Length: 219
Image (spheres, rainbow, N blue to C red):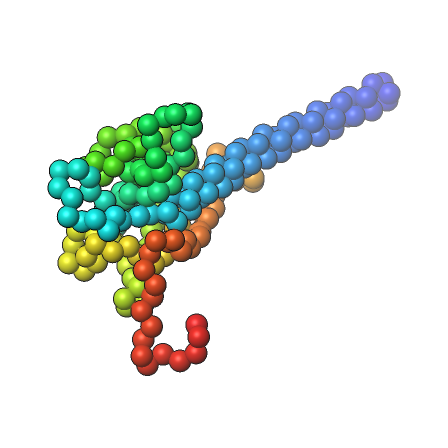
């Protein structure tokens, strides 16, 4: 009876150890998937924003239109033209010019979460905010926030509109991105924790910051 009791105790302890190890493995897989999704999204955002572009030929009529418009909708929405397209097929009638839109919608796989969507049209036309192929970039998003550095004032703006009077047909100098993702809580599998990913991107084709005459130093 003593031997049977000892074996039963060993069995219970072994079962609990294996169960905890499996739970930890499942949590690590979910956590790694969330981190990987965020990294992929930030890399894609970095390339697209870095190569945002406005054509200097503003006299063209009924051919194409380049814009950079962002709305502070919490989460934000932005559409712009860029030189970040990659041709995937040889001899495809495509260049590096592209129209892009980033926005969020409700995540069908998780209550209270959003999915970050990316639209790309491989040819610039008269409607930079329409048409093209739409693909999900990241699931489990809590918020997507953008801010824009005005090169003429040195201030950060919550919105940008190249068709408006405040920022007439000019790009921001930099874009600051904050992406919050919902990740599984290691202590409670039924809850989520928020992880924040942030970066600041200098636009390759953005104008240089106008230096204030009263400023000092070389910052």
